[in-house]
Image (cartoon, rainbow, N blue to C red; front, side, top):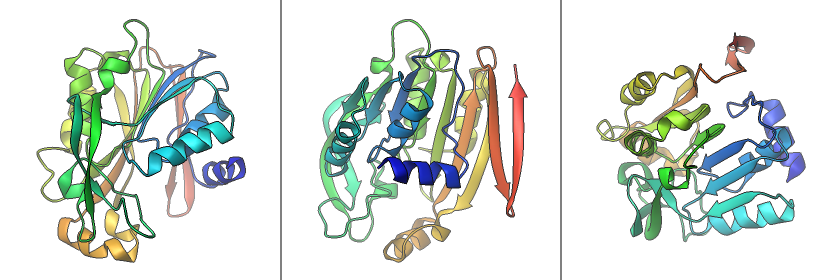
Length: 256
């Protein structure tokens, strides 16, 4: 596991890197999947306190196993989807109980998660704001939840918790029919309203990165992906963003 993570994050520029004066940074990983990012965060900050959320009932046990196998401490695992409501059961769509399943794209958003060979199961949903501290800041938020990003950011704003975040990376998932539920312009507008500086680090047509079994779905909904890196300038030390453009590296350094 360790070697795998090092290979992934050394080969590709990492949008999850952040700087903090705090030796025990508070990190929230929404969409933790099998546990690659918690291990990466622990390499950056061995004493970090991390709360991981993963809704997929098949993926979650793998996440738990990887955390335990690597003997990672101060990590809380939550088997639930983060959303704008707290319910014991909401629909969750994707390849779940199938042979050779591909869990990429499994989601509480029907347009995003429902494909020709999808399952539908019930999962628990929670509000991310209820896990935030009553006082103090959140050093970093990773939000990669397959199309529900705006729901969560809006709920954090309504709960007066969005302003607690020092830095975040938001993976925005968009598709035809999702304009009202997950919109890049609306998300960046919300971040501006709360005083965040942000960069859209990458964008792309989802059809170029998806496996062949998902091509029919991709042609139907025209998915696209964006990575937003946002910082609260009043609290940031510095941030380094690395871009790849036609094989060349561009480094943008901001000092506060």
